[in-house]
View 1 (cartoon, rainbow, N blue to C red):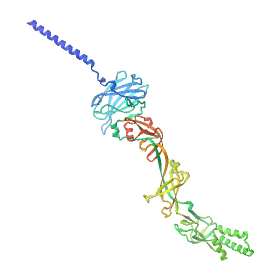
View 2 (view 1 turned 90 degrees about the vertical axis):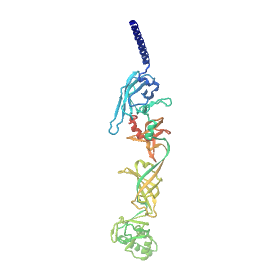
View 3 (view 1 turned 60 degrees about the horizontal axis):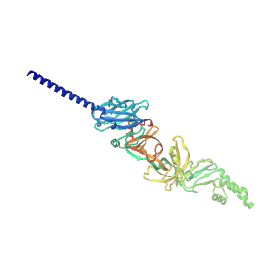
View 4 (view 1 turned 135 degrees about the horizontal axis):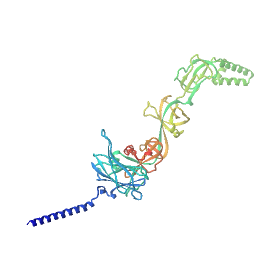
Length: 498
Protein backbone atom coordinates (compact mmCIF):
# COMPACT_ATOMS: atom_id res chain seq x y z
CA UNK A 1 0.00 0.00 0.00
CA UNK A 2 2.78 2.30 0.87
CA UNK A 3 4.59 1.40 -2.32
CA UNK A 4 1.44 2.10 -4.36
CA UNK A 5 1.05 5.55 -2.87
CA UNK A 6 4.67 6.25 -3.45
CA UNK A 7 4.38 5.10 -7.08
CA UNK A 8 1.35 7.30 -7.66
CA UNK A 9 3.18 10.26 -6.16
CA UNK A 10 6.16 9.70 -8.46
CA UNK A 11 3.90 9.39 -11.48
CA UNK A 12 2.17 12.69 -10.61
CA UNK A 13 5.45 14.46 -10.17
CA UNK A 14 6.62 13.19 -13.58
CA UNK A 15 3.41 14.27 -15.34
CA UNK A 16 3.64 17.72 -13.76
CA UNK A 17 7.26 18.04 -14.87
CA UNK A 18 6.38 16.98 -18.40
CA UNK A 19 3.49 19.47 -18.56
CA UNK A 20 5.64 22.25 -17.12
CA UNK A 21 8.47 21.51 -19.54
CA UNK A 22 6.09 21.43 -22.48
CA UNK A 23 4.57 24.72 -21.50
CA UNK A 24 8.00 26.22 -21.06
CA UNK A 25 9.04 24.86 -24.48
CA UNK A 26 5.93 26.24 -26.13
CA UNK A 27 6.31 29.61 -24.47
CA UNK A 28 9.97 29.72 -25.37
CA UNK A 29 9.27 28.88 -28.99
CA UNK A 30 6.47 31.42 -29.22
CA UNK A 31 8.66 34.04 -27.50
CA UNK A 32 11.25 33.80 -30.19
CA UNK A 33 8.57 34.74 -32.72
CA UNK A 34 7.28 37.78 -30.81
CA UNK A 35 8.83 40.83 -32.50
CA UNK A 36 10.35 43.41 -30.23
CA UNK A 37 8.35 46.61 -29.96
CA UNK A 38 10.60 48.36 -32.44
CA UNK A 39 9.78 45.83 -35.12
CA UNK A 40 6.07 46.56 -34.86
CA UNK A 41 6.53 49.06 -37.68
CA UNK A 42 7.87 47.20 -40.70
CA UNK A 43 10.41 48.84 -42.95
CA UNK A 44 7.92 49.13 -45.79
CA UNK A 45 5.47 50.98 -43.54
CA UNK A 46 7.82 53.86 -42.82
CA UNK A 47 7.12 57.23 -44.40
CA UNK A 48 9.90 58.09 -46.84
CA UNK A 49 11.65 61.41 -47.32
CA UNK A 50 14.64 62.55 -49.34
CA UNK A 51 17.11 65.29 -48.52
CA UNK A 52 20.57 66.02 -49.95
CA UNK A 53 21.38 62.48 -51.09
CA UNK A 54 19.91 60.70 -48.07
CA UNK A 55 16.73 58.65 -47.81
CA UNK A 56 15.04 59.05 -44.46
CA UNK A 57 12.41 56.61 -43.23
CA UNK A 58 10.34 57.53 -40.20
CA UNK A 59 7.50 55.92 -38.29
CA UNK A 60 5.85 55.91 -34.88
CA UNK A 61 4.38 53.08 -32.85
CA UNK A 62 1.50 53.17 -32.24
CA UNK A 63 0.57 54.93 -35.50
CA UNK A 64 -1.79 57.17 -33.50
CA UNK A 65 0.44 58.82 -30.86
CA UNK A 66 -0.86 58.54 -27.33
CA UNK A 67 -0.22 60.08 -23.95
CA UNK A 68 2.64 58.12 -22.45
CA UNK A 69 5.35 56.02 -24.10
CA UNK A 70 5.53 55.99 -27.92
CA UNK A 71 8.25 54.44 -30.03
CA UNK A 72 9.99 56.45 -32.74
CA UNK A 73 11.65 54.56 -35.61
CA UNK A 74 14.12 56.32 -37.94
CA UNK A 75 15.95 54.75 -40.84
CA UNK A 76 18.79 56.45 -42.72
CA UNK A 77 20.08 55.17 -46.07
CA UNK A 78 22.06 56.60 -48.95
CA UNK A 79 21.00 56.93 -52.59
CA UNK A 80 22.02 53.28 -53.21
CA UNK A 81 19.85 52.13 -50.32
CA UNK A 82 22.83 51.29 -48.12
CA UNK A 83 22.55 52.00 -44.36
CA UNK A 84 24.33 55.14 -43.18
CA UNK A 85 25.74 55.48 -39.66
CA UNK A 86 24.80 58.90 -38.30
CA UNK A 87 24.22 60.68 -35.01
CA UNK A 88 20.58 61.58 -34.46
CA UNK A 89 19.09 63.97 -31.94
CA UNK A 90 15.30 63.94 -31.78
CA UNK A 91 12.78 65.58 -29.48
CA UNK A 92 9.13 66.55 -29.39
CA UNK A 93 8.30 69.88 -27.81
CA UNK A 94 4.94 71.29 -26.83
CA UNK A 95 5.05 75.09 -27.26
CA UNK A 96 4.51 77.35 -24.28
CA UNK A 97 0.90 78.31 -23.67
CA UNK A 98 0.15 81.24 -21.43
CA UNK A 99 1.81 80.74 -18.05
CA UNK A 100 2.68 77.13 -18.87
CA UNK A 101 6.28 76.82 -20.13
CA UNK A 102 7.28 74.73 -23.10
CA UNK A 103 7.63 70.99 -22.45
CA UNK A 104 10.18 68.81 -24.22
CA UNK A 105 10.08 65.03 -24.69
CA UNK A 106 13.55 63.84 -25.75
CA UNK A 107 13.98 60.58 -27.68
CA UNK A 108 16.87 58.32 -26.69
CA UNK A 109 17.59 56.70 -30.07
CA UNK A 110 19.68 53.55 -30.39
CA UNK A 111 20.88 51.83 -33.55
CA UNK A 112 19.19 48.40 -33.42
CA UNK A 113 20.31 47.27 -36.86
CA UNK A 114 22.58 49.11 -39.33
CA UNK A 115 20.89 52.33 -40.42
CA UNK A 116 17.80 51.79 -38.23
CA UNK A 117 17.31 53.69 -34.98
CA UNK A 118 14.58 53.35 -32.39
CA UNK A 119 13.82 55.07 -29.13
CA UNK A 120 11.07 55.80 -26.63
CA UNK A 121 9.27 59.16 -26.54
CA UNK A 122 7.16 60.04 -23.51
CA UNK A 123 4.33 62.48 -24.28
CA UNK A 124 3.11 63.74 -20.92
CA UNK A 125 -0.20 65.27 -22.04
CA UNK A 126 -2.60 65.56 -24.94
CA UNK A 127 -2.03 68.18 -27.64
CA UNK A 128 0.40 69.33 -30.30
CA UNK A 129 3.98 68.03 -29.97
CA UNK A 130 6.00 69.27 -33.00
CA UNK A 131 8.85 66.81 -33.60
CA UNK A 132 12.38 67.89 -34.52
CA UNK A 133 14.92 65.42 -35.90
CA UNK A 134 18.54 66.55 -36.31
CA UNK A 135 20.74 64.19 -38.33
CA UNK A 136 24.48 64.80 -38.09
CA UNK A 137 26.41 63.24 -40.95
CA UNK A 138 29.94 64.50 -41.78
CA UNK A 139 29.54 63.56 -45.44
CA UNK A 140 26.16 65.19 -46.00
CA UNK A 141 26.24 68.02 -43.43
CA UNK A 142 23.72 68.49 -40.64
CA UNK A 143 20.06 68.16 -41.54
CA UNK A 144 17.11 69.37 -39.53
CA UNK A 145 13.67 67.92 -40.20
CA UNK A 146 10.47 69.06 -38.59
CA UNK A 147 7.24 67.10 -38.35
CA UNK A 148 3.72 67.89 -37.28
CA UNK A 149 2.87 65.50 -34.44
CA UNK A 150 -0.11 65.46 -32.11
CA UNK A 151 -1.70 62.97 -29.80
CA UNK A 152 -4.80 61.17 -31.09
CA UNK A 153 -3.89 62.05 -34.70
CA UNK A 154 -2.53 59.38 -36.99
CA UNK A 155 1.06 59.39 -38.22
CA UNK A 156 3.40 62.31 -38.76
CA UNK A 157 3.38 65.07 -41.39
CA UNK A 158 6.57 66.65 -42.70
CA UNK A 159 6.70 70.38 -42.14
CA UNK A 160 10.19 71.37 -43.18
CA UNK A 161 13.61 70.06 -44.10
CA UNK A 162 12.85 67.24 -46.55
CA UNK A 163 10.67 66.18 -49.44
CA UNK A 164 8.19 63.29 -49.23
CA UNK A 165 8.86 60.40 -51.60
CA UNK A 166 6.12 58.06 -52.78
CA UNK A 167 4.89 56.49 -55.95
CA UNK A 168 2.81 59.52 -56.96
CA UNK A 169 5.35 62.19 -56.12
CA UNK A 170 8.35 63.06 -58.18
CA UNK A 171 11.40 62.90 -55.98
CA UNK A 172 13.46 66.01 -55.55
CA UNK A 173 16.65 66.79 -53.73
CA UNK A 174 15.54 70.22 -52.55
CA UNK A 175 15.64 70.50 -48.77
CA UNK A 176 13.92 73.89 -48.92
CA UNK A 177 10.58 72.31 -49.77
CA UNK A 178 8.14 72.25 -46.87
CA UNK A 179 4.91 70.32 -46.56
CA UNK A 180 1.68 71.50 -44.96
CA UNK A 181 -1.30 69.17 -44.85
CA UNK A 182 -4.78 70.22 -45.92
CA UNK A 183 -6.00 70.60 -42.35
CA UNK A 184 -3.29 73.09 -41.50
CA UNK A 185 -3.66 74.87 -44.83
CA UNK A 186 -7.32 75.47 -44.00
CA UNK A 187 -6.43 76.69 -40.53
CA UNK A 188 -3.85 79.12 -41.93
CA UNK A 189 -6.14 80.22 -44.76
CA UNK A 190 -3.82 79.49 -47.65
CA UNK A 191 -4.85 80.96 -51.00
CA UNK A 192 -2.93 80.82 -54.27
CA UNK A 193 -2.75 82.56 -57.62
CA UNK A 194 -1.03 81.93 -60.93
CA UNK A 195 2.05 83.75 -62.17
CA UNK A 196 1.14 85.15 -65.56
CA UNK A 197 1.71 88.04 -67.94
CA UNK A 198 -0.60 90.95 -67.20
CA UNK A 199 -1.20 94.31 -68.83
CA UNK A 200 0.09 96.49 -65.98
CA UNK A 201 -0.97 100.09 -65.50
CA UNK A 202 1.11 102.08 -63.05
CA UNK A 203 -0.80 104.74 -61.14
CA UNK A 204 1.40 107.71 -60.27
CA UNK A 205 0.12 110.15 -57.69
CA UNK A 206 1.68 113.57 -57.33
CA UNK A 207 1.00 116.68 -55.30
CA UNK A 208 0.62 119.78 -57.43
CA UNK A 209 -0.05 123.48 -57.18
CA UNK A 210 -2.00 125.81 -59.44
CA UNK A 211 0.31 128.40 -61.00
CA UNK A 212 0.07 131.35 -63.38
CA UNK A 213 0.59 130.47 -67.01
CA UNK A 214 3.85 132.32 -67.58
CA UNK A 215 3.05 132.62 -71.27
CA UNK A 216 0.03 134.76 -70.33
CA UNK A 217 1.90 136.98 -67.88
CA UNK A 218 2.82 140.64 -68.61
CA UNK A 219 5.15 143.00 -66.76
CA UNK A 220 4.47 146.72 -67.22
CA UNK A 221 7.70 148.76 -67.22
CA UNK A 222 8.95 152.09 -68.65
CA UNK A 223 11.99 152.82 -70.77
CA UNK A 224 12.51 156.20 -69.11
CA UNK A 225 12.38 157.77 -65.67
CA UNK A 226 9.24 159.62 -64.69
CA UNK A 227 6.43 160.35 -62.26
CA UNK A 228 3.02 158.69 -62.01
CA UNK A 229 0.06 160.94 -62.63
CA UNK A 230 -3.39 159.29 -62.50
CA UNK A 231 -3.27 155.57 -61.56
CA UNK A 232 -6.31 153.78 -62.95
CA UNK A 233 -5.36 150.19 -62.02
CA UNK A 234 -5.01 151.00 -58.36
CA UNK A 235 -5.52 147.67 -56.53
CA UNK A 236 -4.38 144.07 -56.83
CA UNK A 237 -7.10 141.84 -58.24
CA UNK A 238 -8.55 144.49 -60.49
CA UNK A 239 -9.76 143.26 -63.86
CA UNK A 240 -8.20 144.99 -66.83
CA UNK A 241 -8.81 144.74 -70.55
CA UNK A 242 -6.35 145.07 -73.37
CA UNK A 243 -5.61 148.73 -74.37
CA UNK A 244 -7.23 150.02 -71.17
CA UNK A 245 -5.42 153.02 -69.61
CA UNK A 246 -3.45 151.80 -66.61
CA UNK A 247 -1.92 155.12 -65.55
CA UNK A 248 -0.49 158.35 -66.89
CA UNK A 249 3.17 159.31 -66.52
CA UNK A 250 5.20 162.53 -66.76
CA UNK A 251 8.78 162.34 -67.96
CA UNK A 252 11.06 165.21 -68.99
CA UNK A 253 12.69 162.89 -71.52
CA UNK A 254 9.37 161.97 -73.10
CA UNK A 255 8.30 165.60 -73.14
CA UNK A 256 11.54 166.57 -74.90
CA UNK A 257 11.09 163.77 -77.40
CA UNK A 258 7.60 165.04 -78.27
CA UNK A 259 8.92 168.56 -78.74
CA UNK A 260 11.73 167.33 -80.96
CA UNK A 261 9.29 165.40 -83.10
CA UNK A 262 7.04 168.44 -83.59
CA UNK A 263 9.97 170.64 -84.61
CA UNK A 264 11.19 168.02 -87.06
CA UNK A 265 7.68 167.75 -88.42
CA UNK A 266 7.54 171.55 -89.04
CA UNK A 267 10.82 171.43 -90.97
CA UNK A 268 9.49 168.60 -93.09
CA UNK A 269 6.37 170.58 -93.95
CA UNK A 270 8.57 173.46 -95.19
CA UNK A 271 10.77 171.17 -97.27
CA UNK A 272 7.83 169.17 -98.57
CA UNK A 273 9.40 165.79 -98.02
CA UNK A 274 10.03 163.43 -95.10
CA UNK A 275 13.64 163.08 -94.11
CA UNK A 276 15.53 160.61 -91.94
CA UNK A 277 15.36 162.83 -88.86
CA UNK A 278 11.57 162.75 -88.86
CA UNK A 279 11.48 158.97 -89.14
CA UNK A 280 13.98 158.65 -86.29
CA UNK A 281 11.97 161.02 -84.07
CA UNK A 282 8.74 159.08 -84.73
CA UNK A 283 10.52 155.77 -84.04
CA UNK A 284 11.83 157.11 -80.75
CA UNK A 285 8.30 157.93 -79.56
CA UNK A 286 7.05 154.49 -80.63
CA UNK A 287 9.84 152.76 -78.72
CA UNK A 288 8.83 154.73 -75.65
CA UNK A 289 5.37 153.09 -75.85
CA UNK A 290 3.47 155.89 -77.58
CA UNK A 291 0.93 154.30 -79.89
CA UNK A 292 0.43 155.45 -83.52
CA UNK A 293 -2.90 156.89 -82.41
CA UNK A 294 -1.19 159.07 -79.77
CA UNK A 295 1.50 160.19 -82.21
CA UNK A 296 -1.16 161.21 -84.72
CA UNK A 297 -3.02 163.12 -81.99
CA UNK A 298 0.28 164.84 -81.14
CA UNK A 299 0.66 165.95 -84.74
CA UNK A 300 -2.90 167.29 -84.84
CA UNK A 301 -2.54 169.01 -81.49
CA UNK A 302 0.78 170.60 -82.34
CA UNK A 303 1.93 170.70 -78.71
CA UNK A 304 3.48 168.04 -76.44
CA UNK A 305 1.44 166.35 -73.73
CA UNK A 306 2.78 166.52 -70.16
CA UNK A 307 1.20 163.26 -68.90
CA UNK A 308 1.16 160.41 -71.38
CA UNK A 309 -1.21 157.45 -70.95
CA UNK A 310 0.19 153.90 -70.60
CA UNK A 311 -2.13 151.14 -71.84
CA UNK A 312 -2.67 147.49 -70.79
CA UNK A 313 -0.78 145.05 -73.04
CA UNK A 314 -3.33 142.25 -72.42
CA UNK A 315 -6.59 141.49 -70.67
CA UNK A 316 -6.35 139.83 -67.31
CA UNK A 317 -6.07 140.41 -63.59
CA UNK A 318 -3.72 142.79 -61.84
CA UNK A 319 -1.66 140.55 -59.56
CA UNK A 320 1.09 142.98 -58.53
CA UNK A 321 1.24 146.78 -58.07
CA UNK A 322 4.41 148.69 -57.16
CA UNK A 323 3.28 152.29 -57.81
CA UNK A 324 0.84 154.87 -56.50
CA UNK A 325 -0.40 158.30 -57.59
CA UNK A 326 2.55 160.71 -57.76
CA UNK A 327 5.27 158.11 -57.10
CA UNK A 328 8.57 158.41 -58.90
CA UNK A 329 9.55 155.53 -61.14
CA UNK A 330 12.73 154.47 -62.83
CA UNK A 331 13.20 152.87 -66.18
CA UNK A 332 13.09 149.03 -66.29
CA UNK A 333 11.31 148.96 -62.91
CA UNK A 334 8.33 146.53 -62.78
CA UNK A 335 5.38 148.78 -62.08
CA UNK A 336 2.46 146.43 -62.61
CA UNK A 337 2.04 142.71 -63.32
CA UNK A 338 -0.97 141.39 -65.23
CA UNK A 339 -1.91 137.71 -65.54
CA UNK A 340 -4.46 136.17 -67.85
CA UNK A 341 -6.14 133.47 -65.71
CA UNK A 342 -8.23 132.03 -68.53
CA UNK A 343 -5.59 129.28 -68.65
CA UNK A 344 -3.45 128.09 -65.73
CA UNK A 345 -0.57 125.71 -65.11
CA UNK A 346 -0.45 122.91 -62.59
CA UNK A 347 3.07 122.11 -61.46
CA UNK A 348 3.38 118.76 -59.70
CA UNK A 349 6.24 116.84 -58.10
CA UNK A 350 6.84 113.21 -59.11
CA UNK A 351 9.12 110.83 -57.25
CA UNK A 352 12.44 110.18 -58.94
CA UNK A 353 11.69 106.45 -59.37
CA UNK A 354 8.53 107.19 -61.39
CA UNK A 355 9.84 110.12 -63.38
CA UNK A 356 10.97 108.08 -66.37
CA UNK A 357 7.40 106.84 -66.88
CA UNK A 358 6.05 110.37 -67.35
CA UNK A 359 6.03 111.55 -70.94
CA UNK A 360 4.93 114.76 -72.63
CA UNK A 361 1.39 114.33 -73.96
CA UNK A 362 0.40 111.80 -71.28
CA UNK A 363 -3.20 112.15 -70.14
CA UNK A 364 -3.82 112.80 -66.45
CA UNK A 365 -6.51 113.98 -64.07
CA UNK A 366 -6.34 116.19 -61.04
CA UNK A 367 -8.66 117.02 -58.18
CA UNK A 368 -8.90 119.80 -55.65
CA UNK A 369 -9.25 118.96 -51.94
CA UNK A 370 -12.04 121.46 -51.47
CA UNK A 371 -14.01 120.12 -54.47
CA UNK A 372 -14.36 116.39 -53.73
CA UNK A 373 -15.71 114.29 -56.55
CA UNK A 374 -14.82 116.79 -59.26
CA UNK A 375 -11.98 115.86 -61.59
CA UNK A 376 -10.27 117.83 -64.34
CA UNK A 377 -8.69 116.16 -67.37
CA UNK A 378 -5.25 117.54 -68.19
CA UNK A 379 -2.28 116.80 -70.44
CA UNK A 380 1.37 116.67 -69.43
CA UNK A 381 2.83 119.66 -71.22
CA UNK A 382 6.41 119.69 -70.01
CA UNK A 383 8.82 117.65 -67.89
CA UNK A 384 11.48 119.79 -66.25
CA UNK A 385 15.01 118.54 -66.99
CA UNK A 386 16.22 118.72 -63.38
CA UNK A 387 15.33 117.50 -59.88
CA UNK A 388 14.49 119.31 -56.69
CA UNK A 389 17.61 118.63 -54.64
CA UNK A 390 15.91 118.81 -51.25
CA UNK A 391 13.01 116.42 -51.99
CA UNK A 392 14.59 114.36 -54.82
CA UNK A 393 11.51 114.82 -56.95
CA UNK A 394 11.04 115.89 -60.53
CA UNK A 395 8.64 118.60 -61.63
CA UNK A 396 6.10 118.28 -64.39
CA UNK A 397 3.83 120.90 -65.86
CA UNK A 398 0.24 120.49 -66.97
CA UNK A 399 -2.00 123.18 -68.46
CA UNK A 400 -5.76 123.61 -68.17
CA UNK A 401 -8.32 126.05 -69.50
CA UNK A 402 -9.91 128.10 -66.72
CA UNK A 403 -12.64 130.20 -68.32
CA UNK A 404 -14.72 130.60 -65.16
CA UNK A 405 -11.74 131.38 -62.94
CA UNK A 406 -12.51 128.52 -60.53
CA UNK A 407 -8.85 127.57 -60.39
CA UNK A 408 -6.83 130.13 -58.52
CA UNK A 409 -3.05 130.30 -58.25
CA UNK A 410 -1.49 128.66 -55.16
CA UNK A 411 -4.32 126.14 -54.82
CA UNK A 412 -3.16 122.62 -53.98
CA UNK A 413 -4.06 119.86 -56.42
CA UNK A 414 -3.77 116.06 -56.44
CA UNK A 415 -2.58 114.79 -59.80
CA UNK A 416 -3.12 111.20 -60.99
CA UNK A 417 -1.22 109.84 -63.98
CA UNK A 418 -1.51 106.36 -65.46
CA UNK A 419 1.52 104.87 -67.22
CA UNK A 420 0.90 101.75 -69.29
CA UNK A 421 3.76 99.32 -68.75
CA UNK A 422 2.54 96.72 -71.24
CA UNK A 423 2.54 92.95 -70.72
CA UNK A 424 4.74 92.06 -67.74
CA UNK A 425 5.24 88.79 -65.82
CA UNK A 426 3.75 89.57 -62.43
CA UNK A 427 2.36 88.23 -59.15
CA UNK A 428 -0.13 89.73 -56.70
CA UNK A 429 1.52 92.13 -54.32
CA UNK A 430 0.38 90.17 -51.25
CA UNK A 431 2.29 87.07 -52.45
CA UNK A 432 5.65 88.68 -51.69
CA UNK A 433 7.32 88.63 -48.28
CA UNK A 434 9.81 91.46 -47.84
CA UNK A 435 12.81 90.48 -45.73
CA UNK A 436 15.46 93.18 -45.84
CA UNK A 437 16.75 93.34 -49.39
CA UNK A 438 15.20 89.97 -50.26
CA UNK A 439 11.82 89.30 -51.82
CA UNK A 440 10.47 85.80 -51.14
CA UNK A 441 7.42 83.92 -52.41
CA UNK A 442 6.12 80.42 -51.71
CA UNK A 443 5.61 78.27 -54.82
CA UNK A 444 2.86 75.65 -54.45
CA UNK A 445 4.29 72.41 -55.87
CA UNK A 446 1.11 70.46 -55.20
CA UNK A 447 0.25 67.73 -52.67
CA UNK A 448 0.83 70.13 -49.79
CA UNK A 449 4.41 70.99 -50.78
CA UNK A 450 5.56 74.59 -50.69
CA UNK A 451 8.91 75.96 -51.74
CA UNK A 452 10.28 79.36 -50.66
CA UNK A 453 11.96 81.12 -53.58
CA UNK A 454 13.82 84.40 -53.64
CA UNK A 455 12.83 86.55 -56.61
CA UNK A 456 13.86 89.80 -58.23
CA UNK A 457 11.08 92.32 -58.61
CA UNK A 458 10.47 95.37 -60.75
CA UNK A 459 7.69 97.91 -60.67
CA UNK A 460 4.51 97.74 -58.63
CA UNK A 461 1.32 98.52 -60.50
CA UNK A 462 -2.36 98.14 -59.72
CA UNK A 463 -1.84 95.60 -56.92
CA UNK A 464 0.67 93.49 -58.87
CA UNK A 465 4.46 93.33 -58.81
CA UNK A 466 6.59 92.78 -61.88
CA UNK A 467 8.82 89.69 -61.63
CA UNK A 468 12.22 90.04 -63.28
CA UNK A 469 13.75 86.75 -62.15
CA UNK A 470 12.94 83.67 -60.06
CA UNK A 471 9.50 82.69 -61.41
CA UNK A 472 8.02 81.44 -64.66
CA UNK A 473 4.60 81.84 -66.20
CA UNK A 474 2.27 79.17 -64.86
CA UNK A 475 3.86 78.88 -61.41
CA UNK A 476 1.37 78.85 -58.54
CA UNK A 477 2.27 81.10 -55.61
CA UNK A 478 0.74 81.55 -52.18
CA UNK A 479 -1.09 84.88 -51.87
CA UNK A 480 -2.69 84.53 -48.44
CA UNK A 481 -1.30 82.98 -45.28
CA UNK A 482 2.33 83.18 -46.40
CA UNK A 483 3.41 85.07 -43.30
CA UNK A 484 1.76 82.42 -41.12
CA UNK A 485 3.48 79.71 -43.16
CA UNK A 486 6.82 81.35 -42.48
CA UNK A 487 5.97 81.52 -38.78
CA UNK A 488 4.67 77.93 -38.79
CA UNK A 489 7.95 76.57 -40.12
CA UNK A 490 9.93 79.00 -37.89
CA UNK A 491 11.98 79.85 -40.94
CA UNK A 492 13.95 76.62 -40.52
CA UNK A 493 14.03 76.09 -44.25
CA UNK A 494 15.47 78.42 -46.82
CA UNK A 495 16.87 80.53 -44.00
CA UNK A 496 19.63 81.99 -46.18
CA UNK A 497 17.01 83.35 -48.54
CA UNK A 498 15.24 85.53 -45.97
